[in-house]
Image (cartoon, rainbow, N blue to C red; front, side, top):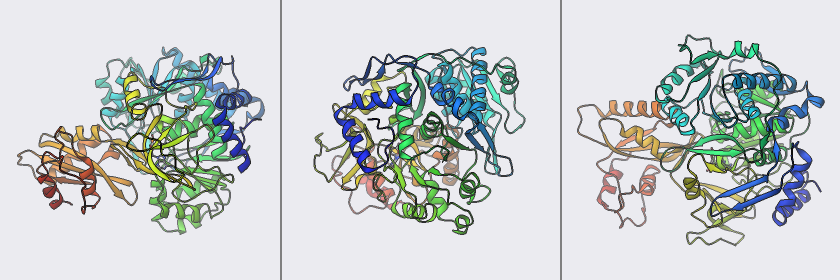
Length: 632
Ligand code: WTA
């Protein structure tokens, strides 16, 4: 039996059971019957949790773009693959058919080849949400180059560190990008970053805003003339199942961002399978995920998952509040969107606006609505369900991570139950478990603990680029024989409910932020001696950042220092990491080994000051009272 289409509860139960009892056969059938391969695999899955070595579809040969493009040409060449909805609603949307997308990808692949890009090379994409971004992603995959998309909201410092970490030689960018009423000077940011990246020899530039930019002779080239001259044919490179497909950076608790490396076959199979079932995508549907391709959600559920299913996927360049807060709903009506996938932070911000901005539009095309990126609180869940889904569209609260490649826990629309705030049940192939502090698995039906996954799945990241030890240490050492997600969760008869991060990653407006790079930026201020940041609950962003800063002696006004601190953060990490509150403190609570006790700082920021738990292990317990007194 092929379990590719799950259409009722029995299907789900059977598929799930099969996937646990005989995962190899389960995935083999799905892979064989739903994808095109140039050569079959020798084995389905080999794994070693201790060494964190995972191999899926060993020895198989394929090119993911043939699965996303070529194989659809005969049956749906003229169907829209991508609908591009520009930032400015007055600019026409573009319907890019599979035929057209195929041509554009081949042209781009030819250009990249001419510019010296080869199989295995890393290519940095620093682009706004315009079709060239999806085209570049696929062009890299077509020639076997490894793409690393850097979200265009990141600063030049963040961009430079990613370029250097993955050893890229080429960057594809744009002159600028439109974001609501603003124009972002992307090329200027790239120029700044490239002062620190000696290996970059080529910058290919898309014209989007036509603003004046500097072009460095010999290094910077406009893309369009090259594309115009390029051939529309490009034979896809034969890739091994385990060849790297992309690197995507995500924040860690400590140190610099981690370049999560994903490979080809397992990623393709799993993202396609989950796209089909989590969104119940059917032929002819129009699907819209509002994420940016700079995040994993955009990789898996704007580009690869939808296109592998021959779906029509919308790429939206703009923001939810431009020209007004009805934009999402206007676009849903305009393109008759059937599946809509967004983030809780967007829902919370739009829920604050007048309902007239929603009711103005006809949302009756919607069949499934989804949420991703952080826990969706009950109020936001109900607002979304009532006003957007009209209590008539299953709301899929999808839990997953950059590291997992695809959705692991989620309701299946019309198949499994939805419960507000519950990501609910694992998808076939996923075996979650909860662990206690003694590293024992919690076997009871009702439990709360550290969320782990105890069997490999096809789309898991294979390593951290250039640092396999960090990969093992971060994900496979806390609980032997299991992948540790870093999240805490509860479980009961409604399934899994994610409670949030257990480490120092803070999720602000759905973006993962590590404390270390932000504290590094703060500490660069000449008046700052030391700092610590924590998250605290925020109505719209989910979490906002609270910074505790120890100042040196200075003549500058504290208000001025605060402004400069946020400027530094903006430059080094990006505007999304700015602090909402900065409190100057005389000291920070530390353990005897010198580690900052963030738990205490978090409680203070969250106004939970009645109990701090055991503070006897602190080196300087008296400081806690001072910090509490100065709470802002
Ligand atoms: C959080 C995004 C609760 C979680 C795809 C995870 C969620 C981190 C949910 C990964 C959800 C994501 N409910 N929390 N439905 N989805 N998270 O790597 O803490 O950007 O570990 O991947 O987001 O964020 P990332």
